[in-house]
Amino acid sequence: MGLAVQRNTAVLLFTLTCFYTLGVNATEPPSRSINHLFDITDSDSGSLVLPTDVEVYRSGIYVVDSGNHRLVVLGKDGKTRFTVGQQGSGEGEFQDPVGLGIDSKGRIYVADSGNHRIQILTAKGEYSGEIPIIRDGKPVRPIDVAVDAKTNYIYVTGNESHNVMVFDQKAR
Image (tube, rainbow, N blue to C red):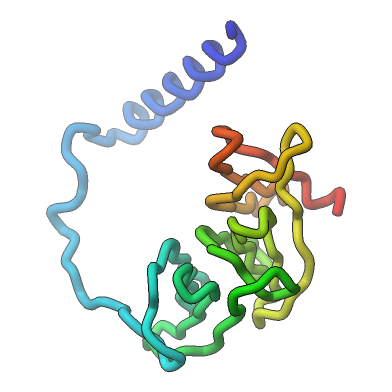
């Protein structure tokens, strides 16, 4: 318990130091200068149903379309570049995908929640591999995923585990 308190204290001190050092006024969010421009409600391949995550990377907008069990990739112009997936458990198929992350090489990591895995896709949306999400011998429903460009560590949040799991991509 002492280590957890030390880590939490360190995170809090780091956060406060960043606000102080950077001169950020923590009491006033920058929302006054944000204007709503438009909505993305569908793609060339159909309406979005329960979009749960979005990432912007290079020239694309990546949307997890959870209700349709797929990933939709749009250009910055809003036109569909490609879609990946359908409901299922095979390669490139999803069961209730929720979150996504993109690494520095453009690989796409999808938190395939219902299949208890992170699916890895190439920048073109082709299946490349997967990471089963298991903790203490039990499958975990991943909720979100992020990739650190410097370390290649993959960070995964899970519903059942109530923590952040860290994977080393170099070991793959």
